[in-house]
Amino acid sequence: MAHAAPASGVRTPSVRTRTPDVFSERAHRTAAWAAPVALGLVYGYWVAANSRSGGPITGWNLLLGFVSALVFALLWRGIHALAPHMRRELHALLWTAFAGCAFGFMYSVTGESILRSVGMSLAVAAGVFVTLFYRFYTHEDAEGHRIR
Image (cartoon, rainbow, N blue to C red; front, side):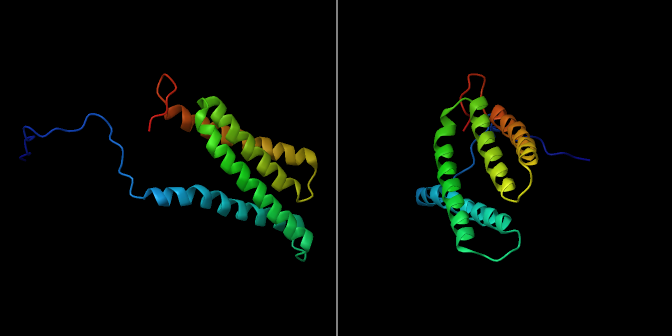
């Protein structure tokens, strides 16, 4: 079997290069507010559905859903703006606290006991912390600067 010899003068990149950004700056600005709004609406609907437990939709149920969606979206946007300026441990811990509290509230409106709600939210928060800490730990250099 014959194999092709490497071509001389052809350089293989030894440094990882960043993939090109295919979206415009406008698309990124739109996604910065559209993502929290969409996730907040899904969260608010889920909270309202858990609260009514399959019963009829009421005005208070709608209010609970929209207030939950608004609070979720505002907190998501605030944490998304604040967290990248923190070290990786605090960055992961902030998102962990947000995820644990969001899940705990959503689970508590189902009518389960507070101990079960706290236990479930701590389990979810532990999984989120492990996952995010690993992600942030592997995406920073030794000095703590994010690799972009």
